[in-house]
Length: 154
Image (tube, rainbow, N blue to C red; front, top):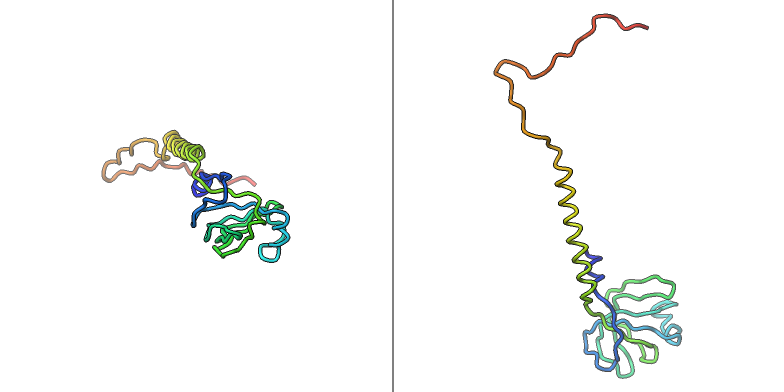
């Protein structure tokens, strides 16, 4: 269920100036930034995701949660503080709850529950009716199996 909950968010492009401390951001890095940040973040950085520590004057200060790479990979971070000169950032986006994705996830979850209940109802629990009446005291309900007295042929 967790992938559905994390999928309910989207990033929306915004103007960088009014972002308050603690905002979740995704900062797209410029070519100049990739060169300048290579020693700290690795080569081929596409985006830096995290929370704003200080709104930018000339430098972004972000607690990094993940770094998206140009090659398609993603590295997860533990909130380390990184300084990014404003000239290294080409685009700023904030993380927002997506109502459309949230309702889609809720619909999928409810549908899965309905299918599971329907399948359990159709299949049942493997029990096919009531218990047969027990035999009278002193009698057995077992059927005899005939035993052949003839020896098996070779």
